[in-house]
Image (cartoon, rainbow, N blue to C red; front, top):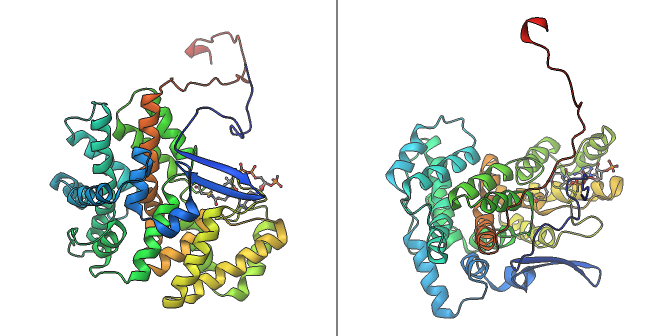
Length: 375
Ligand code: CMC
């Protein structure tokens, strides 16, 4: 038996062709299907990246056009899901709502248990297309606002902002969200993707696997961190307040949300670098304060503990300037990551071996059973 008691740190549990994280010339590189995310963020769009992750190749022009239309035509959600969104208590966290809705979508899909490649791709396109609608509809329902149905006229990112706010986003806002989704789309064997693969390895249906992933993503050490970052930005309130805040927090031995990473230790998370640029660009047309506080916090975090920002850190100021409420931040992560989860679930089905590690028992042994009336 091999012991790996440190949170499975550096343990390889499967092979994948979906993404690669590597150190090249002293820099961290993240590739989706062999393509550098810096290139994808610059030249691609979320639909193209989702296609790449699912099919393994970049689409030709007509394939991308067809894929975009296919996604756009699947955006509407069944009336039963709208009913669910209406009946859930308004204080329900939007990520719990998303998890519950995905489970309900599964119960409505008569082909849920089929696992041919075609069926899996059908379900994948449905999930990628419907998740933004679930998020936007729930938000508008809890705010007591009318629902804005999806439009075929806009791309994935722009349509989401349109359904949320009721007006078409600016080109800068659309590009910012699109790049943010591209950067969140995939990240090898992070905790939520691992959870999805464990579920898939039991041959559970695709919806069950995605529910496992959404539940895992929500924790503050994973996708829930961005909401905590926003809380910190609000508490710090001005760039001048950052240094003392960071020093005190670290002195107390507390974690600084949006910093540190299991893989990117002394090198910067390449996604954080791109998001920093996005956050800076958005700050020019939105509220500058969030970016300025972020910069001040990042400087102090490095000064006191050599901590580097991760993907969740600058996401917070990007979302704030897109007028997305704090408690939807983790849903935004899920909206991007769904493509990666689905690619991994399909890969797991195709190369399956049950994922079932062992635990080292450290409790008492061979105890004598004491009858209930004698305890
Ligand atoms: N604030 C303060 N200290 C930290 C932080 C942090 N954010 N992250 C790591 N450290 C310190 C930690 O205290 C420890 O120091 P020491 O050895 O002196 O006790 C050392 O760095 C190693 O930490 P670790 O917990 O062993 O590292 P890990 O690889 O198990 O944890 C992590 C990775 C992401 C859970 C952690 O960095 C963390 O808690 N970060 C804050 C939450 C966060 O931002 N999560 C989002 C992760 S990126 C997006 C995603 O995948 O979801």
